[in-house]
Image 1: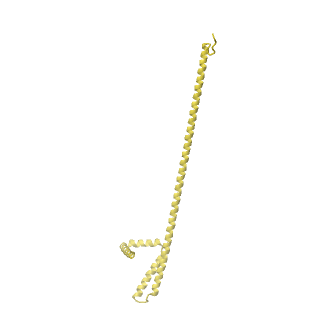
Image 2 (image 1 turned 90 degrees about the vertical axis):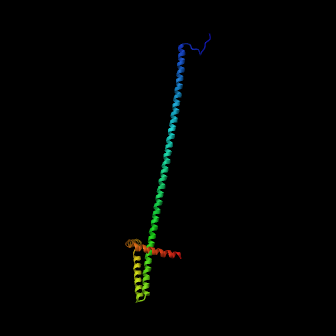
Length: 184
């Protein structure tokens, strides 16, 4: 009989061989299981890192957008404030020019009153009419020289409130004369 090295010598030896093979299989399964868990953990960690990076990037982009929006609002408010300031300055300049113009017109009216007095006859009905016209012109000139536009407007509103019908008739007459002068 020949000796077979692979042939188990006894039942105990076969059992030991089976136990060793089973242990090796268990070790292999445990190693594969550990590697699978390690791979899953690695993928999970990388996924969490990617999600965290994406969240950080989204928050950064949102913050940037919010900053840019705030800057745009600030710029618009600054431009609006500049426009308001410019309009107020232009309005103040226009009021100053109008006040200067009324003062100038008042001075010219006073000068015209003095010219009427100088050139009018000294007696008679024409002299009385000239003196009356010169006095009225001089009063109007003095009024325009001493009052500013807001005072003139307030006085005009008071006259219109006290005499509404007469004011309406004067306005119609003035409009008629203005329309006739524009047609020519």
